[in-house]
Image (cartoon, rainbow, N blue to C red; front, side):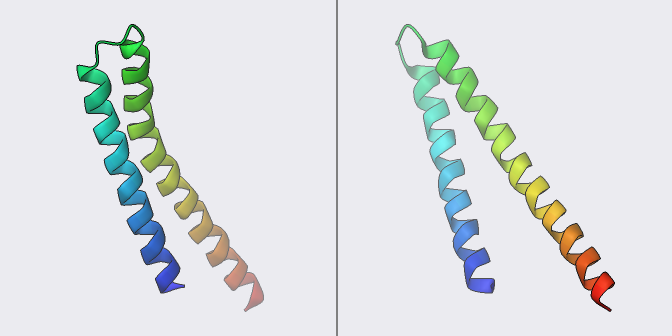
Length: 71
């Protein structure tokens, strides 16, 4: 389980780095839709880590409750 968590953490860090890079590229882009792309990138940069934290928090709570019911 530790190995899986480590791999997922590295994958999450890579995804976040990609989002930061895409935010910079969108901000400097001269594309006609750059503002929409920039807002989507900023939104994803904030929302994805919050969702990952929330999922892990709920998983820990459910796992803890399940273990208490078994005892």
